[in-house]
Image (tube, rainbow, N blue to C red; front, side, top):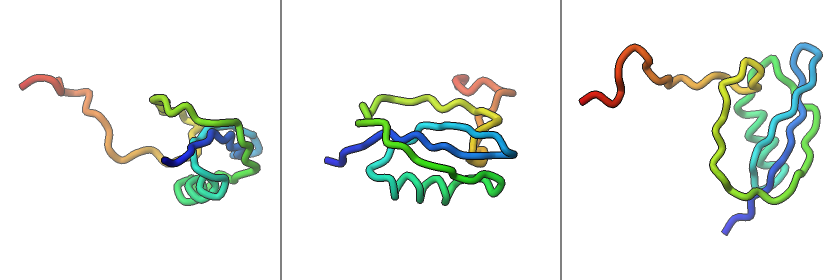
Length: 84
């Protein structure tokens, strides 16, 4: 079983500092994931270990300050998805 940890990622965009939380198995994995998926105008400042990850379900907010590019797949709001 993999042991997951919670990390705080401090990153910078347009001179402002932001903090996000990311689960991972090691600092290297978290940094690699962040660098592989971040926007080009974002820079990673530092990573801090917070503690063990409880593994709960997280709901990510579509924030304009997200360091990652928006997902391509979006829900359609112009039709009822539950209608058969």
